[in-house]
Image 1 (cartoon, helix red, strand yellow):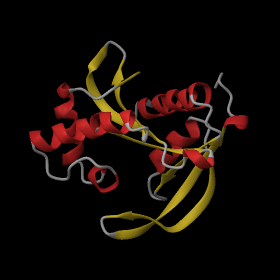
Image 2 (tube, helix red, strand yellow):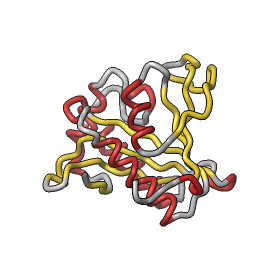
Image 3 (cartoon, rainbow, N blue to C red):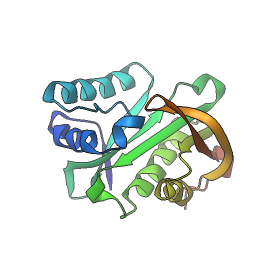
Length: 173
């Protein structure tokens, strides 16, 4: 697994994300794909890093780093409170191979060792068992059930909050 910045060659990955019935509902991937919208999405990912708002990475397989299979982001909106959030998604053909789990472990290591962030959290809809397993694979624990927490498709949805504290993390996992 490799994490890398978005590149202009990732338009096909964004097109795949746009075609997924769920990914555009909880990300800023355009719901209706065009090359212009895809390019604007890539530019936003670079602006987030340069503006200090977070980091967005493409997930790829080792040996095929040019072919994006998904995305993972570390978001710093709450960094002044000592916490950051993480979100991830994979294209449909990349699911079931633990790529998101390994990517999540890598981002956790970067957040804790490179940025010294005390608390990381992520939000998973209760029906999304695969995403919950991904969080647990990376060492996260379910902390809370949050009713009506997230607005998805103009509807307030329940989520499970998963948390990992720096003091609980083991780099050898």
